[in-house]
Length: 377
Image 1 (spheres, rainbow, N blue to C red):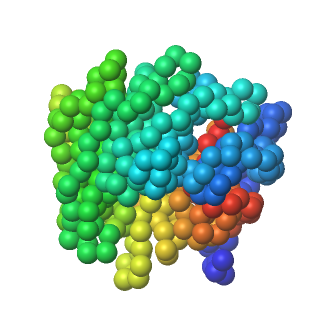
Image 2 (image 1 turned 90 degrees about the horizontal axis):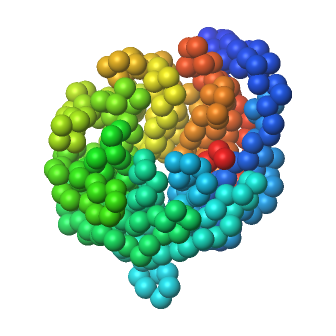
């Protein structure tokens, strides 16, 4: 990491001091199991997390499933669902979606299904726990599945193959579905198409897993909308655009599920013109702080959020601890930020001041093979 100024050092020290001092409030907390999605044949790795020392201890392979790009919980946290970014599964040109039961920090396989097409990179579960949506980056498609009470997935119920494409000749030659999410009231589902500069909006039938078109949000040409996260105020959303490293601050309409641009934020430092790809979003539970990750020039960007309006005020950029931050999360105490640095094969951990939102500039790292996603049990 680069050398830091005295001011940066003081910010780092302040954040770390607050985190250590606050650790007394959870000093008796037991270790917590963490699953890490891995883009290797050993697709889900297990670790134990100590919130006092901020140590990750490897436990082993939780599930031997290949090329896991994403993992997520059911709302009741009894089941884990995965997306495997494959070109073939069960003899068909698709990726794989799978489900597991969680028991005593271990994963037990329940079901596996073909997605709509190749390169399945994301899965999301609706707020009822009855519907799973997958997104296929390579095939530019999305599909839905019903989830049984025992956690098993049905064959796909609904699917759509997108045809939009954008002006970026290298990255937008075709559609690339990258993300799925649900509105705060669970009436609408959203599919981000990075290749087409579009977020597709659907009415969701949670009983049948059928999605019905309800509109589109068009990002700026060449922006490449990658992710969409809703603020706890339930009317603001943040759309991260990968290709131009911007964030669309959006107003969500409860009446019809539509998204309206309020403001666009540039993530890059002024004057930077090199390779850059924006990535993921973290929102603190109280809605007061929002964080974005950016790749290639590799940093985290911290911002203060107005809990009522969702408006953002910059705090500053800080190190992500490695190369290509694919995913990052706050631990349950929100005193630590963990970053999955995909190309460094490391998970980096930074102290966080919960009062100011400031992240330490320096942290420590733990080995993890091609980490793609961090999930606390």
